[in-house]
Image (cartoon, rainbow, N blue to C red; front, side, top):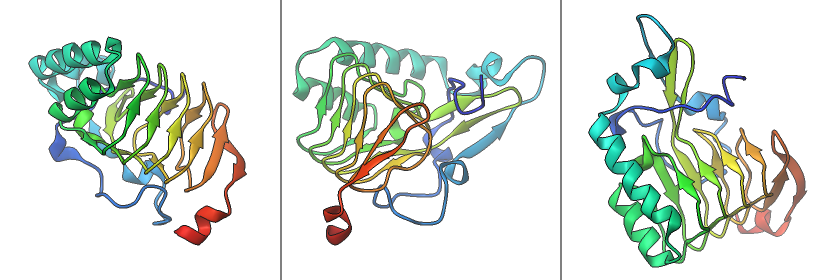
Length: 198
């Protein structure tokens, strides 16, 4: 399993990446540049020391709230619960059943107005590796769509109106108006009108 594919967990909100901005912006930074790195020491890999990274009580609370939200058919309830965990969720955001935000650092997620997070999609804000764990914000732009079963890795920005195909692994930014698909996700089409709007 590569570093990017490793599931992980991160740190408190004080360890956020370099800031916010419109998703899909061309700031010259890659997702890896936006990740906060947290070296670990001692025996075993970083996941073995997750309780040093985040309070077990906080993780248990987050897990319980996210579990309820995943199963709820009410979009309003999902949004309310996710906002209570510190996520920034715009108006009109639609969450598919079993969609899962990061359980350790949900406060690092921003979803803009009218975006769709599809059935069983996962938004990760952390990754545990052998000798460190990393945290990074995930930003989903206005009217973007993340397909069923897709996985978005920490530090990724998905631009306004972008589309992520079902079962894709998003390990890089997705520019506004672009459709990506695959593992790893690569562009398959682009809406030229998005250039005119941006």
